[in-house]
Image (cartoon, rainbow, N blue to C red; front, side, top):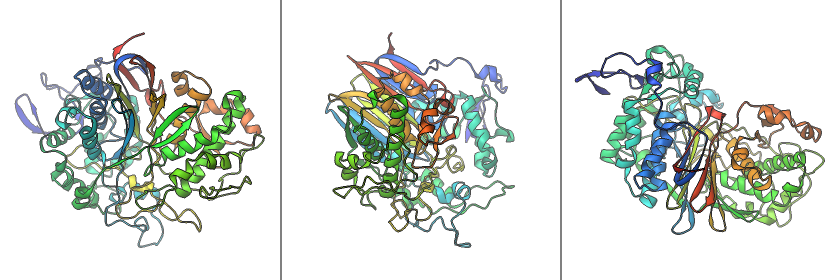
Length: 602
């Protein structure tokens, strides 16, 4: 990558400490941390459209597009592209995601499945070491080309703009290009993520050059730049998505997966990837109907398979609708929330996979009659043994006798999620990801973005005993996801839009926020900031410290807990009527998130 500095061209590291054009001096942290045009805040209220995302720069990008007359879809693409610059450990061109859209003109909710796919050379044995006959250690598989699925991110952006946009990629990529060129101040959160990954980033020369300039992690406040990514975006803006799906960028992606750029002093020997340019050329997003359940008079729309999020959230809500949580005491209400989640996860693990390869009984899983057969398993006096067995959604009468099932490991870790609305009333809830924090750890040389490790979301070996495993790799198959972008309608109009990062904890974060807001009557800010617990059909419930502190009543019922400092990082909107929107992010999780509206009001 070349940069013009003082009228002369020179080679630089792709993501570097910025050089001040006027003085030629390296920017100091204080110089780099000038106040941004948008103040970071987790809460905003007003009119004209709203954005909640992980970084100030990405939220600003969305607002700029909205102010130029763009739709929620236009703004969402600008937000996502900018997050690829400022939140690169979580998502970007090297990943994929799920896009849920409410169209104010038609009143319909639609979705785009932009999940990554398995290369044509992949199969159910691809994570078995041919030398030992045993599965690769998870960490080995992650930091390798073998874990990289064919990215769907850019194709999702293109499809969203085709369906609901007023602008094209040339317009919607401009804010991200500007940030990548001019730079942004390194946040404590991003520095923490680089620091956590520096040992594996050092294994790949392109990744070290991008995130460890000079061999060290930059300090908080340092002005970071990514001119390689800016040029990649420019190439896409000029040549279209074909530059990625079969063109020069795609050739670089495929070559990187097959021959990762190992550093001269690398201490790992990663298994090579199987992606080719033909896999990229063949990639397609999927337009599909959302999942849907009715809950307390509300219409809850989510992401259908290949994501498990919409069905699992929906089934848990259906189970909970058999109980009046608002009239139960706090302990009993939380007990029912945890048990409903446990049962829904048991069914998720058994039945949900890519519907192009697996017969997913979606209608049966989301039926009220099936929910009643699962609800009868919840004992108000004692916790269900875990792992609970899946039910039989195709059986007319389920058993109310608890049974043990098979444990399933959860390897998903992180993503990012954001929400957007526009002045027309359109709404987007969009979760996108490269899977682990830092994805595969492999940056495409000269292109400025990390590649995903989404294929490690497949089970490496069968997990369902004698029953078929719905989540084994196959050529062209999408790995099961937990992403749960959600839009809730009330009387046919938007009421809530929400979602979260966090791997399989996404499902429970969305579920808990809905229960907090709808059943417990919390304000949306309180529903988001309330302490979280996630029960995913495991013996112990993972919970934040503040939740565990108040859990004596749950312990008396048999619940046990494993502490996790933070769970999720939600982005939410509530529609207050007459065009007014409440935008709510996280006050503290992941360092706090950025909420803003076009025209603020009280």
